[in-house]
Image (cartoon, rainbow, N blue to C red; front, side, top):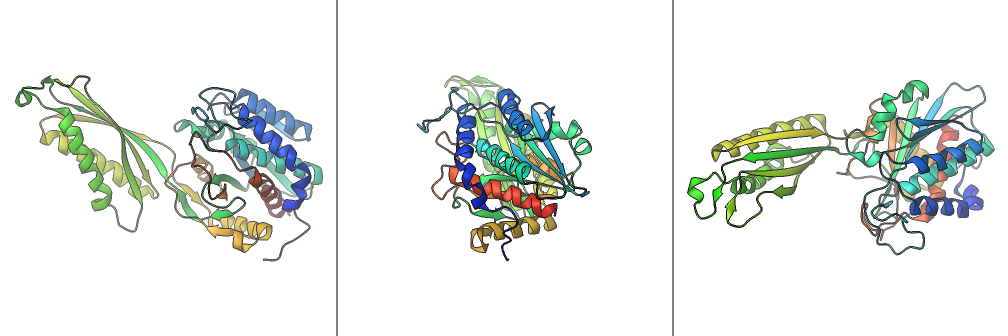
Length: 392
């Protein structure tokens, strides 16, 4: 695709690259957890107000939405960045490492926020579009349940700040910095959490025949649950059932009354998501009853599947190819991780993109992870160019 030099280019951000790096390092050094993003939101809002945006604070908690209308165009677009950090103690040794013990930007939200701020400054200064852009700085993406996206939507996000489409991104360790990955349709998985409580009959370890051992039942259930994906799900589809924790008893010579299992369940299709729940419930009851025990299954639905719209993904891909060349844009594989941007896509068409964070990048949520500063100008230019083209 032919590059259009009348739209934003990566080189247009060279002059503010050091400012972007300084902003990212500041955010990295001062991480705030989900629902606690007070200073981050203030920092973001003040910058946006200084550039002339109409800024709304405290949208769905600590959310910030910046609106800028240029010309008489009736179209509108929204771009979202997340702001929260994770409860992890940083082990990077960086000069700008977290100043708060037990809190860290281990998922790159400091970089996501900085890139959108970079685009915001450029768009306010150049104003080469005709319509309305809404920049959404979202809290509590890492919450898992009752997330920032849900809270902002419940607070009237799309009624207060209408948009024809919405876009977002996440950095992608393992792909070269500045490389874009995109996929139409399902991209990231639905994530559900299950807690299973098995109730048997406790007693002395030397007399197991007088008990109903929930530990044995729990171990049997772990193995049985793995057959659900291999024997109930179409081999061409993708699903994951992981038992992340088992808790039972405290002493070697005591058979406990109960055992609990905690599961993470991932899927990419609503029908498969429903089938997984049905089979987990049925399998649990069958195994427990087969051993003379009872079981309770608490199924907590988390984020839904991230489903990208065809037209908006094709549009974003075209912009990325203009920006960095077709050789630096590829189709993304299915990602079993989850993302609350999915809630936005249930209300508006749009696309969630992935931006390379370096081939040798530490994985997300690692205590040694760090966002790649070399991607900052690429991300900022992408959001600026996408806005200009969408509102052309």
